Length: 267
Image (cartoon, rainbow, N blue to C red; front, top):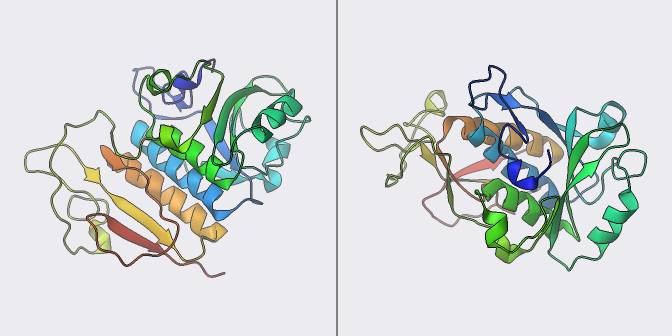
């Protein structure tokens, strides 16, 4: 990949195994630093929703912790976090330069860059000055649309600095449907979770599935992050529209049009 704008194309993170021009998988794997805050890890869930939205198929799991991933790197890795075992000269060429760039950011700013790997090839880093910055970088990528980077004055295609005011947090259309008015949700059973009787809202005679959800947790344990990421990706696969962000910091009892998914780990 030679430009960050290509991330959501078959020249970026997506693959096209049967060469019909339609993304049907992913050519990357995401390596999440375990020694990061819950806010950083929630950024992966936002990305997972967009991954599902852009592809017609995925193979689970797509995220692995950095505990053992560095010894067996995927072909085109994406490294997420402030702390990540891959953030070293042994893995990333000229890592000191990227580290200085990151440490020079303002609070709340994120940093996304295409990096050269020591073994050859390229990877992507999604990091930031602090946890809020990493989350903003992930959310920016999750909600990014074509030419957004130019509209925001980003000059380089190899590295972007992301500030909160540059992040879209509205409905993203996959292009597989047309805009419709969302109907109110009603009660449903788990057997209909991935249907228009469950999470998805569909107008009559429309092929569009729009979903507005918030995943919430009291503690955001690692096992909840893993589960929520897989679920977000599955929801993205079935939906034609997603409303970002799809996670919330803590459990809230406030009423809204969004469906709430409560996560409860065993830790």
